[in-house]
Every structure is written in structure tokens, then in C-alpha cells.
Length: 300
Image 1 (cartoon, rainbow, N blue to C red):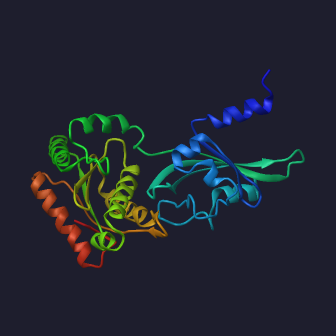
Image 2 (image 1 turned 90 degrees about the horizontal axis):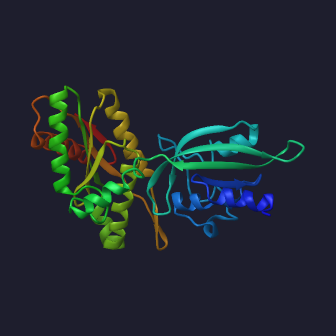
Image 3 (image 1 turned 30 degrees about the horizontal axis):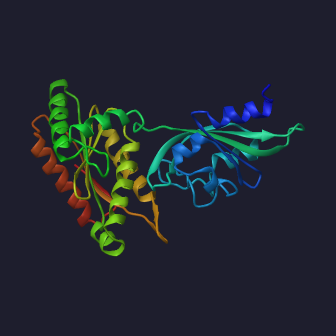
């Protein structure tokens, strides 16, 4: 007969949501298989470390660090109230990943809080798109480094989305991002580090998009985002959120932790737009951001 504790451990280990426990000092005591899969960190890398250490480094949509200030788990252990939040963890590979986090206090028989429980699941559109990526890779429409649409696929998608917007009298948002000082990264750390940065930026951008949005590698260190059915009031906050999430992403390479920023241009489709005209406009806006000091978005 299976003992209750063995059954409990088996259930926890095989849940689809990430689960971890911390003690009152926020030292991680348990880390299940889903937590490994979602975060990229194994239990051996995590167990015995504080959740305040340089590991997941949760931030909110504004890029504000939560681990050492407004940590939902610490707040729950303090007041006993359960919480549900959408935050962005830093994956082991460096990119920012949106997760839905639930926290609860762990109590002893007397009701005293003796630790905290956090469960989390991937809240990005990336998971649902994996099969589509595999299919498109077979058609040579995917950049093999970043797993985003390549230039050809980006151009095809842009033409379709602009035509749809004009036909349906809706707005399509187009954004272009360029990694700041990318040549300096390649020159300083080598091209393998540059590839790591491109993958980190790509995954951070695509993770916060809606399921029907599109992200493509336009070329080199440039990325094109296409977002149909867009509201004008969303343009600035969405573009800046993506910029901040990239800025808050980082990846350890040898003894260095690499961080980058992006400059961007963002625009909405017009009734007389063609793919060439909207690309020309957003490209001009991007380079306006470069001229104004980088790590910023110019809308137009």
C-alpha cells in the first residue's frame, strides 16, 4: 500500500504547474519537475538557495524587481493572505517569461506560519505555438537561431495582416526593435555570446505577445512584431513594456552576466499603407530612437 507521504510527493512532482516551498528565511526546500521545465533550473541548482538570490529575479510589467521588495510570496508569509499575480521570471537562458504565480502560507498545527508555497505556470503564447514552429521550420520559414519567422515569412505575414486591417477597417500595429550596441557584444565576448543575446531577446519579446501576434527576425539584430486588431491607446504602453522586459533580461556567459537594451519604432497601419510604406515608417522611427540616445521607443 502506498503511504500518504509517498503519494503526496508523487503528485507534487508530476503536477503540470511549477511548485516550490520555502522556509521562513525564504530558503527553497522543494522544487518539482514542472518548475525545472518552466524555469530551466534543475532541483540540484535551486535547492538550499534563497528565492532572493540571483535566480528567477521576478519583475512586474514595469520591470520593477519584486524579489527584494514587493515579493508576493514574502507578503503572503507575512500576512497569511493568498495571492495571484502575473510576473516575469528570468529563465536560466536569460529571457523574460510571463508566469501566473499563486502563493499560500504553510502553517503548523498551531496555525503558525512556517513557510511559503508558490505555484506557477507559463503564461505565454510560446507554449501553444511550438507545433506551429516545427511545421514552419520544415517549410524553411523559421530562423533556426531564434525560432522566429525569418525575413521571408515576416514579409508574407505583414502583407496579409495589412490587407486584413484595411478590409476589416481595423488597425494593425507594427513594431521594429534593434539590439543596441550589438557589434560591441560580438567584439567583446565573441559571436557565440551574440547568438545567445539574440535568442534571449527573441524569447523575451515573443513570450509577452498574444497568441495571434507575430514576431520575426527581420535581419541581423532587428526584430519585427506584427499585432493585428490593435487599439491606439495600447501602442505606447505595450512597446515600452517589451523594451523594459528586454532590459531586465540577462544571461550569464562565463563569468559575465550579459544585459542588453533595444531601440524601437512603433506605428499603426493606415488605410493607404503598403508593406513597404509601413516598414519604411517604422524603420525611420527606430533610427529616431537610436539618434535620441537608444533604449527607447519612438511612436508615429
